[in-house]
Image (tube, rainbow, N blue to C red; front, top):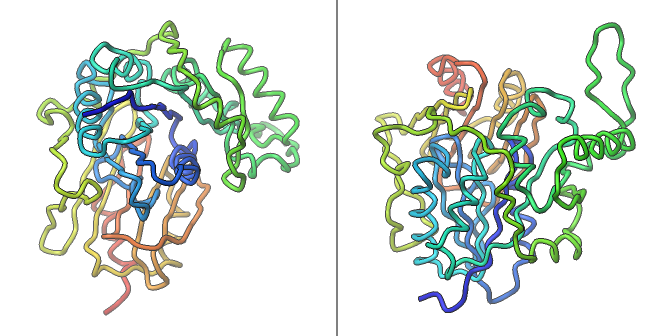
Length: 365
């Protein structure tokens, strides 16, 4: 039984904006003795973000809903997932991270409904964005990207470490000016906010920085629930007719334990998805698969895709790979139950060829 409404933050942002990294920073600020729950919705099918966050803290319960958008089917997936997580974890705080291709206005409507009025205390919603993408029409003119910004109480310009000290590049010929210096980029952010008439409070952040007290206080304020923002049409491509509510299953005895994948004879699971103009391809490998990190890095770096995420068991340890538009980072993790890799592309790929390339990166026995 929930004795008081659970403080809840909706954390949105387009693909690669840094939502998972920001949630990790928030979890680092969790008061001792409190239980926090995180509901993660991924566009892809295999579920990687929980592994990227880490689950070593017994006071953190992470629940994944892969394979679609929580907002679809009149909010049913959101209702089911939130209800299950609250019942199992009984958290003091709930963080909800929808897919970067999702429709946050619809999720916000569900969370603001009478069904959750007595169990959720909706706090400020936050939208992370990479300011360097504001000049890219694939982002700045994308309805979902704009909707995420329009409903947000807080606008968080992330990845500041990558652009703050950057010197502006001088374009030659018809070369597009994408790399702006820190001061110019701040001016562009202000102009974009004014042009879109965004109401959210603006903050800047980098993963190298601790979350400042002002931002944490803003996150604790009641949500303004900007439901008057322009609605975006729901894309039927994300809703699979035979998938029920995106394969949400009752939580098992251990809320942090992942569901057992259905391995093939080689110890591999492959899943794909498509919708919102994107395609996802994902693989899971049993823990006895050992990969060569250097070759894996070179292979990933050479891919021409929108997004790549992976948690891989390598001969050099557990590696987390994160790539957006060719920018690839690698971090070391403490543990992993298996190896997982997912690719998101704007064009259909040949998964059989990609799989053979991955198999070739396995360390020889």
